[in-house]
Length: 154
Length: 225
Image 1 (cartoon, rainbow over the protein chains, first blue to last red):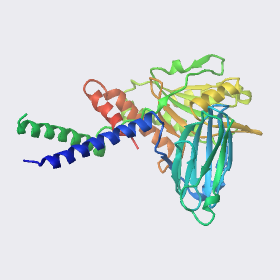
Image 2 (image 1 turned 180 degrees about the vertical axis):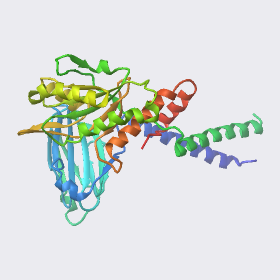
Image 3 (image 1 turned 90 degrees about the vertical axis):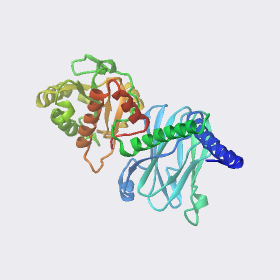
Image 4 (image 1 turned 30 degrees about the vertical axis):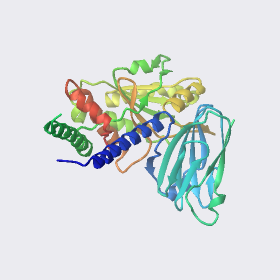
């Protein structure tokens, strides 16, 4: 089978690009800690509102390991203000009790879609002190722009 | 190189690719994931004897987190008792060549100290399995092991201890192979039994050439549901 030289170049370019993307994904995952938020479980929105752990920051190990059960609803996050010590690993469990929302922590690799009925999970270690804003990244109605919160790393 | 060599090369690579896809899709072998290393610990049983993570090396350990007066962990003992009783009926456990320890980490050492011995003896007699009820007098140390290591939340709330119900399977190399924090459609006791059977199957069969297939199952994330 004869393949035209230009066609060969395009095939080679396509294969090279695929390989490059695979390498880039690997570097992003292992060198920069980018993660695909995993689906932890399904949950009924009404159960979220009745479960006392939701809307809270919980300390697993003082100063080192924390988990945040974050509720997204129009148009607020609960809790809206999270305080954690520097160097702590925080696991975010995020769900919505109404419509689709987004959750992005500025200045970090945390970004995920938040769907009602599902719990998204992502972990991050806050090494630098400061104030990290988190925002809703999916348009969720009139006051979408007011849906934000902050993580204070001391 | 001649054209035939190219065809042979592409054909060979294509077969490998198709084989990999078929392995992933049909999952002829299923395994439990290697999640992370279990934490090291030195805890104490009712008699004050140290029980360490090293004592669990070489045997499978099923961990549960519990307090006599707790909110959230009410199902931990019944579930683990059911698993302990019915494990010998599982196909891979019938030979009786595998060792398993049922470890309950008590997170309320102040109050539960006296009852640990009674529970240990009762459950050993009732199930015929190896049970360890362990704790540590320093709650901060327990937080490090249970909260930081096993990632299980507990906190004292007035008269009760709030404990997240969670079961953890650790293999003989000290690697966490299963975490069960939620109730699913399949009750936890059945899921635990099924997964312990999958783990035992891997231990029995992952030898010689079959070991490569088991490693491939890990590589292609062929995890038991």
